[in-house]
Image 1 (cartoon, helix red, strand yellow):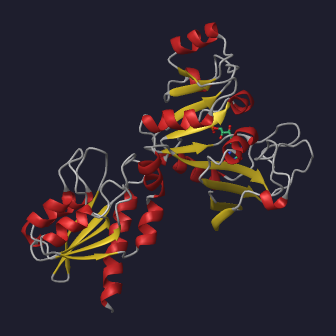
Image 2: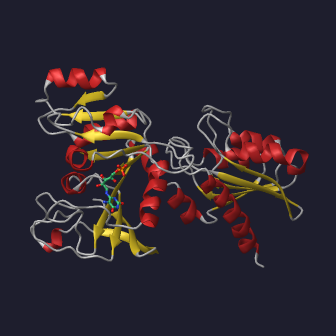
Image 3: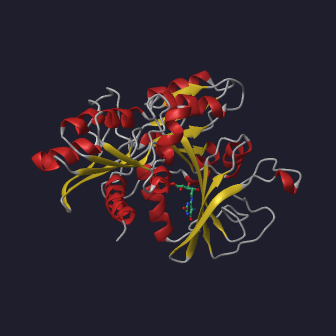
Length: 365
Ligand SMILES: Nc1c(/N=C/[C@@H](O)[C@H](O)[C@H](O)COP(=O)(O)O)[nH]c(=O)[nH]c1=O
């Protein structure tokens, strides 16, 4: 077995540990670490929650004296700054490791490379870039958020094979299978916030909660420029999760007061329509690093046409409903020429029961 493939074997284990905490480290990245000494794993760790120890610290605690002279694998460059916990690079030096293998550099421009410098200045061998792609894809949310301070936006829709989200009479239950819908609930569990337009609330009285054992409910966000939302909507009355409503300058002040009295946070953005950039800035400043848009066709189109969508998740059922009046998952004005189409990269397809799950990234710029 080559030296590099041994490093990849242990880095894969570190990545599995990082991934195990998906959904609970936000707004921090997911990080995993493995310490190996004389061919034996002596310590394993994962970052589990913001403010708690980083992955390397958990692994070092488990390894104790066995760390000395060993190799530590970590999926993200050890931190060099005094965040909510002490710098990991210094802890690695103190523990007497002789080699550090890193998957991805820290995407935070303020600290990129500093951790590596501390290690190399202490005479420790540093190998970088082992399974870098996998580590950066795992932390696509953090990598975007730490630079833009806005949440990573995933537009999710469930459609028939002819792209409809409901029939012409608005019937939509169910398009996709229980397996696909469960996959969506795992996505909700991992998301900081979930966003719909008021039209979806009017049509489905959506709960927008995560129905999974030990499921975590994301913050619920509704775009409602004139506060049309029914005051008995479940997102207002069920107390299952906080609900924020973003509205426009024409919203009825009396209704706004009643909604706020019901525990809903109402945020007015500039202009009659809801300003999506201000929505993202507000969420980002509240440390929401990932936003799941389950829009409805109009809301999805707003995010896509304004270039604010990062990722598309499309669940397609092997069904056809037809009908020129049946709503699609991307309404709005649409582009005029095919060469203006919104291009997607890195398309991945997988089968979930009878349905197909498409995952792709919006090309920016
Ligand atoms: N109709 C379907 C969906 N429908 C998605 C939205 O239209 C629903 O309002 C929203 O998921 C309801 O939220 P809830 O009350 O929390 O379940 N989404 C899916 O994945 N498959 C479908 O077949």
